[in-house]
Length: 148
Length: 130
Image (tube, rainbow over the protein chains, first blue to last red):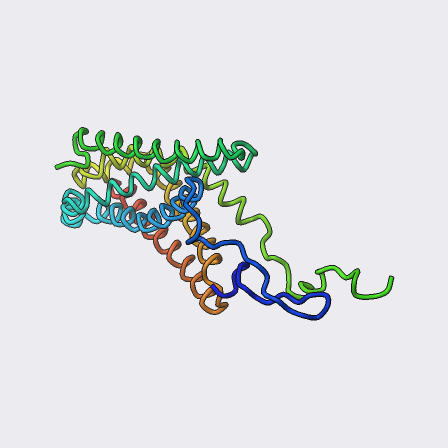
């Protein structure tokens, strides 16, 4: 942390003196704009999805191993904690997907104006919730889906 | 043309080496991101339909050629995309050189291990019915 670009390192001046220059206010001072929240949520959902790849590996290994191994996985997946994790996985994926598309649009030059950036950030939050809730509901309805 | 006032900051970074791989990281992150847009839609549909199914049904689903290939691509793209993203996080927050190298190495090892284990299981399902 102490090597970051905002650390108060005394800057040499042409006259040979040094002084501590003023710094921009740090994270804890700002009221969070929605764009900043979206940026951090993108990173957080990325970390959550990384943990999710372990669950994906477990699912595939259990299915490849046999009925007994799969029964252990299925029992955990059907339980309440498993369902909560599955919803969290769905929402993280939905958010990271929509937010990722927002990043790709920026990469080709669209959506940089402040009102547009605020609007798309809100869209990503609302859209990801709608996607996750409807995907979870569909999963509960289909035969052999998330529910028992 | 005397002296120090015309010196650029170039001297400060000379001898430190290049910035390593240029835009390769950025480009690979974007390529896998674009690939993962359709692949993750397919993956969520498959997971919703088959997570709660019988083991035999799941294995049979992934043994289908189209599903096997799509799952193979999803595992490769997502574990690679994951390792690129986690690498950025490590580089942002871990500044002590030794710890950083260890974390970057661990990140790649974990991605390869998860990817290899997933693909091994997938290939096993594909050939189980033969």
